[in-house]
Image 1 (cartoon, helix red, strand yellow):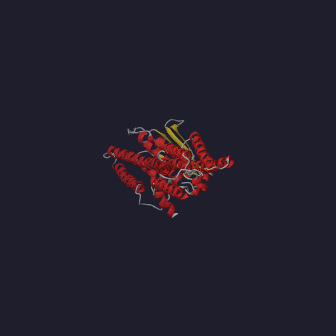
Image 2: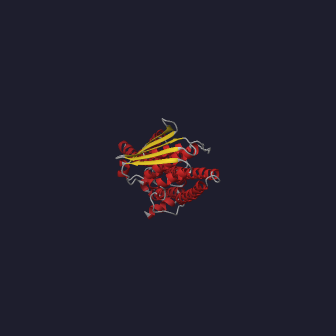
Image 3: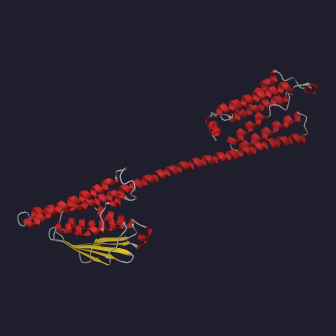
Length: 400
């Protein structure tokens, strides 16, 4: 394997030049030593300057077979035909044209390969007949020689094509992996953005309403004003705690062993009573009803349900105003968790801005866990949010 890696680092041109020189040298040495009384008796011309020059012309084009296969092929075969026609020793100069035939078949289209194979076969046949071999033997050696080269070249061409396709597929796979990684990053950012939206929107809305309430009753009802200020402090501390948890997710070196750090410090339905109390402190009349035996929910579903209730109450604080009556109902059923949050507007509307992303975020959360959500005007006025989240399949799958 180490030897293969060494050869892979060698420039192919160096290999081709070395092969051309070695074949030229061997051919010339063989021609000089093989010219004996037998060839003199047959009237063969001596292997001298012209034969050496033609032998070089046959073999040296191998050096550029990768860069100009057709040109090298034409020069080599033309020199071989001239060498054979001049009557020189016919058994020399046969291998370089065969290698050049391989180069053309390996690198050129099939129609070019057929012409190259035919030309090489003809040159070999001419050489065999010049060597006084029988027609059958001359044709046989031509067919065998060219057939072996054809099989070798075409198999290597198919292998090279597969390697190119494999390289393309590998590059495509790498790009797809990058896109999947980028998609995962975008999804995680959207996930965190939803959390930040819910935290900031809810707490800042509650703070704004509570601050307005404290200012409104500061002189007429100091106790209510004090209660609103205390609620402002509690909401601020809880917002800071949740923000720290979310920002900790963005630290790459923290929670390395936590499979889902986003949910680790996030609130759930166990903090629903605190959420209701803060909403009451903002001036809303909130009633909470829970039916069915409470159960431990997967963390993702728990957070999803909490955020839906939180967003619905936030919208009520923004749009229904102080004094609004709000009912929050949760039902733990055998295979699902259902919830309904409805309100009846109060006497003093809270004119707080809204960008409409809250409902979008709720729908995305419910869709993520295979649930349903309905949000719109209630049958008796006001606004109503109802949702259902499946539980059994999530429990068995380890959802969250």
